[in-house]
Length: 382
Image 1 (cartoon, rainbow, N blue to C red):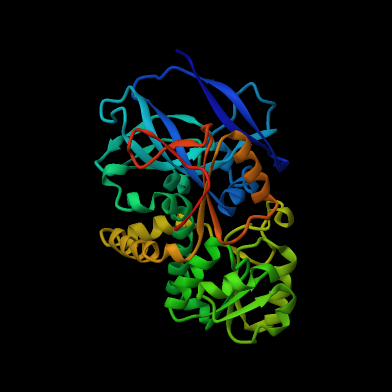
Image 2: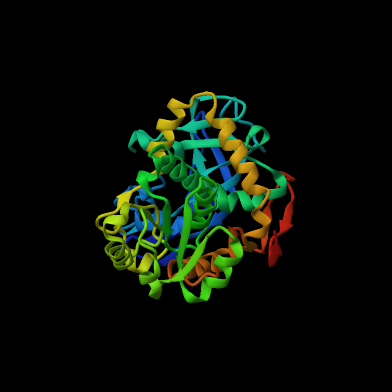
């Protein structure tokens, strides 16, 4: 029986305009697998992927149908758990669960590369730059070193964000913080920002949060920032040797912070676009873009054999604390996903909520490798 896929398409010129499109799933070729995308995390990270969809080629990972108007739509990438529902690959069985980079859809066909081990494999995307290889890796749940069934929802939400923060912290530490003793972090309530703040504070840097008035209490409650300031109090940032880590993408904010610090601003780094409306797909001038994949590749080569253990230990410490950070909200179905996407793009999601979503209808999702459908409606404190 033919299978119909559901995919969320966004307009490349205005990513707040989204629609769910149904397209047929073609038959598998030899050595391909069909993956049912069970659930995925949704955060400002996905908004950044869409904002940079053209310039950084995130839309090229999962091209829309050839029948679509050229250059009009793109599919948003997500980090998801998926189940192999059909396989023509001799080493990937039906029923296996995978974690990796997928489109915001119900299904995706993957062709694994030749190199496969018990923990992961890659898919080949030769049309993309070599530094995007990290996105081509799929982890096999049964031997995934970062998978914990108790924290599957948290993993879907935090895993990509945490590694951006982890490698940003690593980069800054290897550069001896560029001579700074303080780091000023914008969009301090965003998950990428506060994961980095936690790591920065552990490394000995003084941390200063910039956030909106409505998020002040939440940011203080996290406990990762030595000082919490609202955006209209930039003049209160002390003039000490400082780094500015920009997570908002706001050009005006970056200009104002750098101008206020003057010669005390040792480096300004951009790592995200939580303020999608103002960023409009470009980073503030005068900031250095930190793109995690090339640095991660460099460190894998330099710390071969030891980096996985360092990462695993750091990840475990984060997951041991994650229950204090957010409330997971689980939603499903095309209408709910579309609504949350638009809310996320417009920056109106509460900072203490993390979304785990599914395009499958009926508020159901396959979860935790049980092979049975389970309800995901409502909220649960994690």
